[in-house]
Image (cartoon, rainbow, N blue to C red; front, side, top):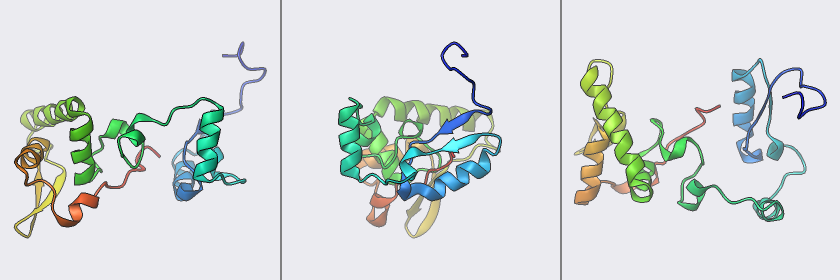
Amino acid sequence: MKKYLKTLPEKPVIVLGIDYEEEHSLKEARKNNAGYRVIAPLCDPPYLSRLARQEMMKTYNLERPVLYKHGFPHNNCGGFCVKAGLAQFKLLLETDRERYLWHEEQQETLVRENPALNKPFLRKTINGVLTYITLRQYREMLESGTGLSGEEQFEFGGCGCFI
């Protein structure tokens, strides 16, 4: 490493790709990573508009991450997160079925191997009752046309767990 840097940093630096709209996440990341220097250049003035960021990406020949291209609200965790909402899982199934099915199988394996500790994490209101369902159950609902209803189409869920 030293051959690439004139001097090594005193402590490791974590660089986050979040902007001023997510500054609350930067504060949380600094708290959770106290032994490290945590920076997010897009949180610092001058604040870049979305247009300016697009220009910067063009200048440096950077591509927009694929998950954004598919409509995900963030580019974390490959589109899968246990904190994701039903709309995000629907989008994952539509844009990367293979990844969805892989997670579905992982969930089934975990539940099968230790049913007392591994429960479904998707929450769906069915007939007025909040119910926990598996990824397979949800996929089957989507494929039969009974997956998303009402406000669920907007449930992408919160992330930030990477911080």
